[in-house]
Length: 372
Ligand SMILES: Cc1ncc(COP(=O)(O)O)c(C=O)c1O
Image 1 (cartoon, rainbow, N blue to C red):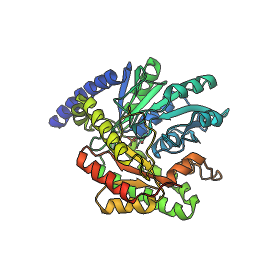
Image 2: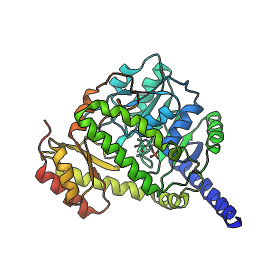
Image 3: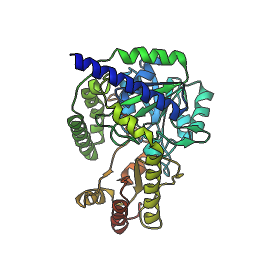
Image 4: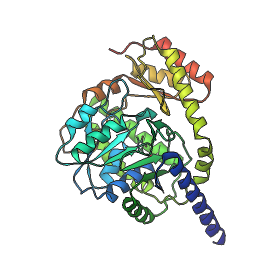
């Protein structure tokens, strides 16, 4: 018992230091650690007093978690399209998708490429809607004169699988400059219990359910509607207390986040160099992101993805847009660019081992067919 108490104190001290470091990296006044990035979004929506049943607008080509967080907060997730070249939010679609029910916009730096966050904030300001910057995959990059995690009314971060920094068991954080929002967040986060779940098992179950739904949806898109319901199975895991998570590991990784970003940029540049001019279409990336993955567009993703995995390279393909996952009553919707991209996208891993990146890129170059 005494040992447990000492551990908890040590963990709290590390957590405070990590929050301080994240304040430094994002330039924010307040940072609060959370059990996950999903929890960070849900707490922020609640702390912003977004009324239940009203809409939170986000890009359709996105991982399911921001939509799930919206549902956990009692709001409705609403969507807009992305740009075909960067897979990030399309400002024209964003503006056209705002309705009288829109009460918040979630702006995402997908795969670590910075979205036009200032453009999103202009649109939001014109419509009097707050912005949550989702910097889950972009921690540590500069955007214009600011930093990812420093834009909008609040920003969220994640340290789960596939993020700039992954820690075993995951974790998240929320950052803001608004002292009232900050104190509401702090109170809310404290009320959630610690949930001791084995990260590996959680991620395996999550992944299996996702792919089973995805496969069913390839024959019948209505199957996607069920995924939003599965998400509830994981609610306790996402909404857990941040206490007891591996903040010591995060603290270590944050020491040289610049090096992490440099390596990721090097990987993206290498993929670009090898794949440019071939059949695969490389994204129009700025080179200023924190590339956690490198997605290209090809004409044969459904066969090349499995082939790459047989060769020992990780990849994802046919990850559908999330717009039909959360509202089973609504008719199926389509966002043309998101639909175009998902059918052609082959998402390559950003290995830090240069040789491995080269071999993976060469395998893609050899077998890719041009996207139609
Ligand atoms: C863009 C984005 N936002 C938020 C999240 C949620 O983060 P977490 O897994 O820590 O809940 C994820 C990934 O899961 C993500 O990809």
